[in-house]
Amino acid sequence: MHPFIEIFGLQIGTYSIFALIGFFSGAVVVLLRRKKYPLAPFDILALFGVIIVGVIVGSKILYIITRLPGIIKNFGYLFTDFQKFSDAYFGGMVFYGGLIGAAVAAFGYCRYMKVDFSQVCLLFVPIIPLIHGIARIGCFFAGCCYGIHTPAPWGVAFTHSLGAPNGVTLLPVQLYEAALNLIIFAALMLYTRKPRNVKNVLAIYMVSYGIVRFVLEFFRGDAIRGVFMGISTSQVISLILIAGGLFLVFAAQKREKVV
Image (cartoon, rainbow, N blue to C red; front, side):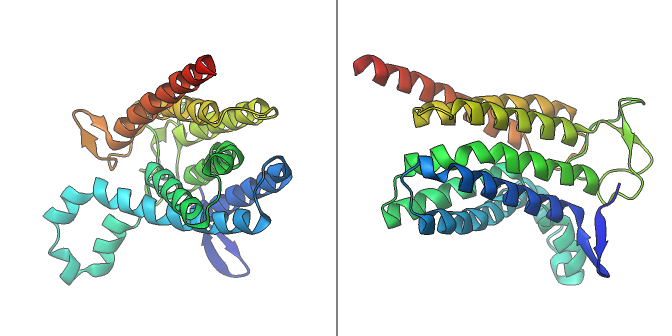
């Protein structure tokens, strides 16, 4: 694939380009939908800024956590070959870390600025799978987050990947996740055309993506994902996400019955 694209003589990471396209697409959707929600334009713009920071910080922290055993084992290389050590143990990002970081950053901003967090969720949650789905296409072109060995025609052989083994037919799990994320985005957009309980909106995303990620993790071929009791770090978080989403559904139903 093509991990880099040359623009005006500069090599730019393909993943970075698709991530930017994803954020831009998400921003367009938010701007088109913002009149439905009582949020000031300044707060929406500021939230995008703090969310981006939260995504970067959170995704890096969780990536480092998943690599802690290797960091501890090879700590000596920090002083002998810093660049190689940094690239190996600090050069990646984990989506769930970014999701947690974004949620914490948005909640902190809302608390500090006295903004209705539920309205922010209703506006921003539907664009999460849109941004994520487009960014996953960038993963495919970059050759990261690759799938297990799969014979043709189901497998795709990378030729210039910096992460996946080149010349080996691998399941393009990145594209499956991208497609499923876009389906979740479409479902959320249709569901939120009418006023909805924020707990139900959160639950739809949490349960649907949690299931998608939990299943697709079994088809991932890259080993750097952390392992806990036989399942990956992302699968543990997926189970927590699914449980949390189901709890929100029951909580929303219980409140409606009381009302």
